[in-house]
Amino acid sequence: MPRGGTAHCGPQRYSEDNPIPPLHHTPLSEAELSYPHASDADRYWNDDHPVLEVIRARRAAGSAPGARADGFRLGLAVEGGGMRGVTSAAMLVALDDLGLRPVFDAVYSTSSGSINAAYFLAGGDCWYPLTIYFDDLCTRRFVDMRQMFTNRPMLNLDYAFDEVLEKVKPLDYEQVLKNPTEFHVAISLVDELTAISPSEFESREDLKSALKASCWMPVAVPGTGVFRDRRAIDGGVLTAHPHLLALDDGCTHVLSLSTKPIKAPPTRLSPGRRYSVAYLERLRKGLGKAYAASQFQYRTQRRRLQQWMTEPGDGPQVLDLAPLPWMREVGNQTQSRDTLITAARHAHAVMSAAIQGIPLAELRDGSFRSVPRLVTVRTADGERIG
Image (tube, rainbow, N blue to C red):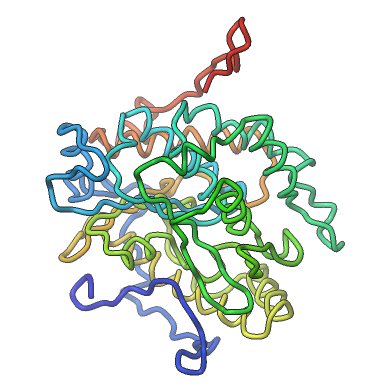
């Protein structure tokens, strides 16, 4: 029971004994609606936050997974959201740039965040796979809004997984499987109304199947994916936020990477979310209601995550880092290269500033900022870089 007796909610399984909560919800109180972090705030996180202290101490000690001396379990939670995943991808690049890949004991991921996390765990230069968002996925080969009112996918997962991840910028599945850091991929099982997060994969194809299922975004990708012979879709449908998986798995500290800017939580479902509820309900009775319940849970968790940035409290420690309030939000089907590159720069700078204790004023005035790295993709003798 973290945070003074407030229980967190992990993966959900709905049944007669655990019914789907009603779709109506209690309005947020004035205290919950009042958001303490305006765009001109002096700080958004504590520079001495317990999560940052553990990360810095582990880097200084040079510890590795399976050989810790501090007694903590440090999790890394990676949110996705279609093309919005460029944000968490850039944060992972910053962690890699700062030599922090080995400090985490387990990684928990949803949606496109699972692809980002897989590249992170595969080793190599994280800058190179980051470019899939603004080189390979922002074209009509992947995002095609003309298919909105057809039964064809607006997001072409076959192109992403069979072309980009296999041939253009290959993901080394074998290295992910060999990495001693646990890798959890959130998946929503359709017929069971259950959220799972498998971490033991039998083969590269099993891992690939998990990643593809976790990215199967409702509406944008018709029907369902398949994971181990069960119908499956985007892990974010039944998992409000990946940090919940980390807490449910016993992490004492969690660095959470969110892809939406810091802002007051939504008070109601948007028209797009309501359409998704109806779509999911047609896909499987009860699934739409379960998704709505997860969205209401997300509202509460979003507020708590923001509070814990400056008020860590007792119990498991969670630090959520996200684009700052004045930074533009990326849509989950954004095709603008400029928007995607700008978002990547902002997210990289936020993570770098938090880890290094850079004053917020330097982020705001631009004196501390991130710029893209230019590198050729292969050497003269044909060896691939990254």
